Length: 294
Image (cartoon, rainbow, N blue to C red):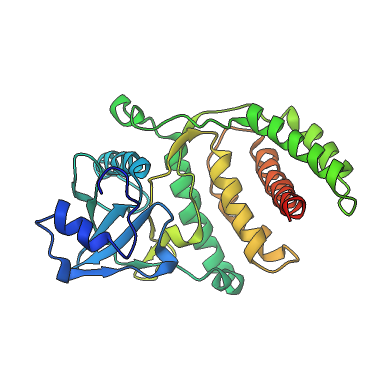
């Protein structure tokens, strides 16, 4: 079971009974689906801890990476809060972390922010990203974080391939504007490398005791070396996808984060635009693929 079987809600207790004999199964409570990542099952353990169990063998490396990164971050003076690793199985079968006294916001709550709340939110998220992207991590931490296999050069080629497919197989979608935008952004996409969270969704932003000025970040298992704009692009994609369709609220929130984000990259906004463009192209490409297969 430890090597090949995927772990799910139906077999996780048998798995833990076999491999985590020191954990009291009666004290576990599965975290709600809203906070369940795709790669791990997460449990509350007693009143002060969280237990993460990777679903698959290839997710265990990510858990060990997360443990190593959080161990280091807990030695630093941070403008944000992270969990403290308590212990981890040497092969990444499971790990225990301290439980953060914080809650995430339903994304629709962001549209109701007052100017003061928007400022606090932007300052908190901007401070976290500034630290993560600019901090000089030690070699022993960096050695656990792989380099992304989709730098801008690769992403541009893939976008071009998808655009050609869409142009060939659909008549409803006109790709000319997307192609022209892609070409106009190309010169701005110089690849930079930094530690990037790579899963910066609203569910992974917790506010300590509901205070927008005290941000806690969770779920670092997907962390990679990549361009810092990747985190900002993913955040912007969620805002523009899930908030009001006119994009007004999304732009206010993204701008609030950028206001407090420290970078010397003059192309950061162009790179975010590129991320949004990739998302739009990919979504239409997937729809076209489904139509052809059906």
